[in-house]
Structures are given as C-alpha cells and as structure tokens.
Image (tube, rainbow, N blue to C red; front, side):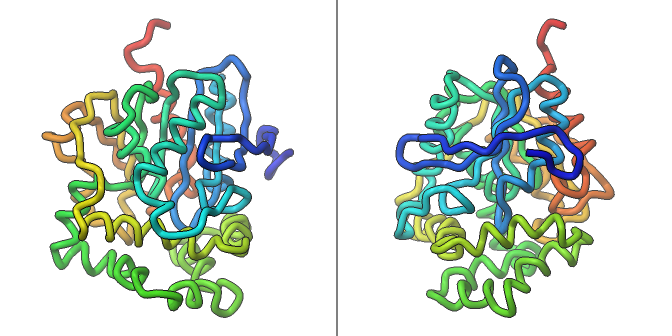
Length: 292
C-alpha cells in the first residue's frame, strides 16, 4: 500500500506470544530489523514518514499497533498493560520476525516501553532509540515538581474510571484531533489515530497504560529500574508541550552512554513533524561504530 507517495508498506498480523499485533512492514527482508513503537494517542501510521526513510536506507522496518491499539489484540483489564507484558510484546515481536535482536525505537509511551525493554530484556536490543519519551526514573521524580505537574496533569485525570473514555470520544473524538492540531499537525496525519481509537475497547486499553503504570508505582509491584549499557540515542523536539525540557537528558547514573540530539523546531510529535532529522539521526545511530 502507498501512503502519500511514500514507499510501499505491507500490513500483517504477527503473533508476538501473548497477543497478536497488527504491523506495518517495509524495507528489504534481509535488512537490519528496526521496531518503531508509537505513543498515545497514536498508532503505527504515526511512524510512517520516518519508517519509509529508514526503509530507503536498507532497514527492515516494523511498525506495530501496540497492544490495545488499532488492529492489535485488546486484552481486558488494567493488569494486561503492565510493563512486563509490554516488554514481552517487544521481545515476542523480535522473535516472530525471525531475529534475535533489533534496533528498538520508541516515541512517547512507545519510548517508555523501549526504555523498560532495554532495562529488562537488553538481550533483544541492538541499539536503543528514544524520541520525546522520558526515562521512567526521571519522569517519576519530575512529576513531583510543579513544572512537570502542570504539563502532565492529565495522567491523574486518566486514573478516574469511565470519564476519560467519554471525554476522548466526545464530539467525534475532538480531543484526539485537537491534541495534534494544537501543535500544527494536520488532520490527515491525525486521522489514522482517530480511526485507531474508534476500535471497540481501544480507549480503555490506551488509558490502561497510564493506569497500570500508576498502580504499579503506588503498590511497589512494578519492575525495578536497571542501568542501561546499550548504545542509546535520545532525539528530542524542544517545542514539547507535555514534557519538561530537562527530561530530554536521561540520568547519567541510569544511562551512562546516552547521546542526546535536540531538534529546536520540532514538537512532541517529532516523528510526524520532523521525520527527516529524526530518521537521519536514527540511521546514523544504527551505523555508529560499525564497519562500512
């Protein structure tokens, strides 16, 4: 299928172990595997502009709808969206694609999943890429400050039963379209995300990521952070309305080798509004230290 004149992609269902994930794939079958993980309230298509650029560089790109989104399975219950299950999906997807390791890149909630995968399953990651997604330890600390609380207050709203689901769907998903439009993202870009959120069970599943995270922190049942020794690149749109600028730099004690690239004109949605520099930095990161 073609999107906006870009490279062809194929939609397929992949058995990741616990769930079936609907994935967009593009690029040569023998290319190095790259997983691109989307955030909230996004979908696999949110990565398409970056994906086709990486495919053109010779990478085998896989962009899944995360569990609960779009065409992927939507298990019921908040616990089904706890970190260990999300990490298992990434590891299962790498295995299902016939590989032992992959370059794993995540944006927003997909970035959180990528951070945790690097901590809990570093064996399945070659190089780690993060795009506008805070390190979990840094974010937990930042939410205790007024600066980040003002930006991330919605996390607490999302803990309320049924009301957030209703608000998301109100006036034909005006809130979903609006969160993109306020950063200048065109309706044609947000349309696939709205379609993803329309799927039965998708709103509660998307919100369950936030609910499971907070419950895990409050109960102490969540996984313990680990030092990440993997080659790590953080690409950060500096016009991010949702995350304090300090979060662009992960804590050195937890990610000692991280390299940070700031994009002054990009917003939180940098895979959509700055795909060329994002793809360029990621491709250079994947090649770094490898023989030509």
